[in-house]
Each structure stands twice: as C-alpha cells, then as structure tokens.
Length: 586
Image (cartoon, rainbow, N blue to C red):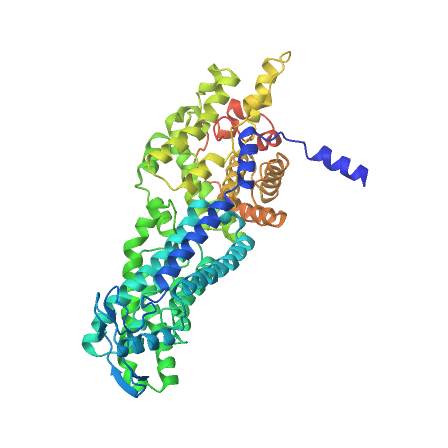
C-alpha cells in the first residue's frame, strides 16, 4: 500500500495552492449560514403575517379597530342576550361592524364563525405557529438543495432571489385576491372562483427560467401549501396550484425565445381547465360553476404569462443571471464585442467559433448547459482583441512580434489577455457566469513555451514557474473546465501535420491528461467518466474539421509555409500539447 501511495505521489505532483484560491476556499467554508438562517426567519415572519387571517378575536361590546367585512356568504345560528336561539344570514362583502364602533352580539357571532372556518385560535398563537411551520418547510427545502445543489447554499445572491420570488408570489396572489374578490362581489361569483384566478404559477415559471426545474419543483410545492392557507376550507386548492405551477415550470426549461413564455402560459391554461373540471365534477358543481371557474383558470394563466414576460428582464439584470434567452441574445454576431473581434482579430474569432463547437458538443455529452458552453467559448478570448498582433492566429507568416521580446515579457503579454477580457466583459455588462469563464479558462496553468525558452536562454539562472503561470483561478464549474479543455485541444490539434483520427485521439488524450495532472480540474466536479465523454466528443468534432480532401488536378497549392511550419511551431507535438500558453493560442 505504501509503495502504491508513493507511486501516486510521483505521478501527481504536489501543487502549491495560490493564496487567492486558498482564501476563496476558506471563505466558501465560512459562508454565512447565519445569513441564510436570518433570511429564512425574516421570510417566514413576513409570510406568516401576510397569510394570517386579518380578523382578530372580538367579543360583543369591543370596539372594532377597523371595518370588519364578511369574506363569504354564510348562514348561522347563535345565542342572543336573553339566551334565546337566533339565526341570521350573512352576505359576502357585508360590513359586520365599522371601525370605531362596538361589536354587536350578531357581529361577534359571525366573527367567531369566520374564525372557526379559518381554523385559527388566538391571533398571536396563530402567528407563532404559522411561522414555525413555514420554517420547518424551509428547513426541508434547505436539506434538499444542499444535497442536490450544494453550491447554491453558499450563493447568497440566488438565496435572496429565491426568498424574494417566494414573497413576491404570495404578495401578488394576495393582491389579485383582493381585486378579484371585489369583482366577484359585483357578479355574485363564489369565493372558489376567485381562488382559481390567482396567478400563483408565475413564481415557479420564474424559478425555472432563472435557476432550474428541480428548484422550481420544490418551489411549487411550498407555494401551493402557503397559498392553500388562504383558502382553508378548500382542500383542492393546493393541488390546483401545484399542477399549474409544475406545468408552467416544465414548458420554460431551456426555452430559446421570450415568446416561449406565452406558449407556456397557454399550456398552463389547458392544465388549469382540466384541473378545474375535475374539482367541480367532484363537488357536483360542474354545470353550475364550471364555465366561470374555467374562465378564471384562463385568466390565471394569462396573468402569469404577462407577469413573467415583464419581470424576467428585471431579474436577469438585477440578479445578474444568464438565462438561455439572454445567452441566445449574446450569440448575435452583431454584438459589439464579437463584431470588434471579427475586424481586429479575425483569427481569434475563427478560433473561438471552433472552440464553441467543441465546447457545445462536450457539454451535451455530459448533460451540462450546451448553450452556455458555446457562448462562453465565443467570448473567452475577447481580451486578445486589445493586442491581436501578439497572438499567432492573427499574425502574418513572415512576422512574429515575440522574436523581439524576452520570454518573460512575452508571457506577460499573453497572460494579460485574460485580465483585459474580464475588463471588456464587465464594461459591456456581460453576465457573471461568462466573466467567470473568461477568467478561469486558463486556470493557473504554466505557459510552457516561453518558460522553456527562458530556461534555454538563461541556463544558469533559477527561474520561477510562478512567473510564467496564469493568475487563475482554476475552473470552478464544469462548463468553464470544458472551455479550458476545448481551448487547449483545439490549439494542439492545429500542430498536426497529418491529422488522422488516431493522431487526433492521441493529442486529445495527451492534452486532457496533462491538464488533469497539472491539477487544473480539482476545483470543479468533472469525473473521469465525464472526461472520457468529453474526449469522445472532441475527437468527433475534430475529425469532422480535419476530414480528408482530394487534391484538385491542375491547382498549385504551393505558397507560404503552413501555420505549423512557423519558426515558433518547430517544437515537437507532444511539447506543444503541453503548452497551454503557446505564442498565439494561449
């Protein structure tokens, strides 16, 4: 066992963790759990207050603090002041007692009946109990998120987004409940019709668009439970809200156009109608209330689609989230950064397009967001547009500016394209996930070519590898790692004189192995199985790019030296495969 461990230690060199990454690791371990707990408590208190019935405990002779209005029609019997049994019919919207007036025997009896139907005892006890129950649901949700997406627990911005969406969904539901209650009173509609019209599914649709469907599933469950408290006498409402929310979230997964929200709203309307038919049929009210309730379900879906269409750009901007819709907009060739790259550094632009093809295929192979991988690849080298002539893909065959520079100066120029790319991305308000890919696509890898050249020129001087390494950090996500691998593999493949499938496969395996042994993938969640699938997808795309072509008779293909015959490209292919920071395609 000891000899095996020694062998592993020799194969996997010990890398010193950069100070920045060490600090980041400590911070990730010290992520403010206290802040998450505070958010959960504050959200629970707000929700408990919003969902608690507004009618408090009032007795005959008490002074009403505000107007007390009957929320629904009812018939009740109560005992009068002389112990006689009395009966009374109450209409929905009837003012039981005005603010500042004393509560009558009849009003007190009606208020007790309302509180009994709402299932609440003491007002303060009800508030505390509701807060406790909501906290319990939040804890279970937290445990699920921690298991499914542990990184989300430490992402304060997204935790705040989830809490805000939950509060917004309940607030919007309560707002429309008040509006629709007033409208229903004018048309003598039942209280349940109002419940069918609330746009509760808007929250789940936004969560699915901004985060992912798994979170939207849990979010739908929580919202359905909470909104079910608004209608305590109707056990079917949580089921109705849950089915509508799931349908809304399902049909915006990986949506590519903003019009997809309208389509999702239409399908949600269909599900709402089906659920309403089942509920009314169970109650025996399909013929009497079915038309009004179905119309309410359509209204709910229409308002949901409208709210999501209006609010989505706001959440994308405020919370810096790149939805698939946003990513598609960034793929537009007329985007200022891409357009500038076409004119100032066409070689880099072509290189980025090829990287996009490789990254997209690899992301699809391991189940990651392929669109994000392609867009991240398009922008990963935008910093080269600042000094395009220093990168080989933009140079003329008879000129190389690095011939007049020292290796250390050349490495500084090559390294600077990462920092300049990050600055350009921030100036154009690119999403953080794209900025992270730009910053991480080289990790803290060494620029092998210039490091070896410096050692040859100064054999007697001790050189520090750190001076020839990118500043990092190493890739933190699978997509960023995929872009790193695609960048290195594509550059190495360009050095092949005879790009046969076997040689392409050999270069791909060599590059991925080198990056793995250089400890560049230890901060992301890529598995060995993922790396095998990524290598297969790279080979497939590269074989298509370097496919065999016939020679055209009578056409002289002689001319300048090919790219891999450039003086700076004369080192062996294996060394080139290890040079992530080569002159032109670093």
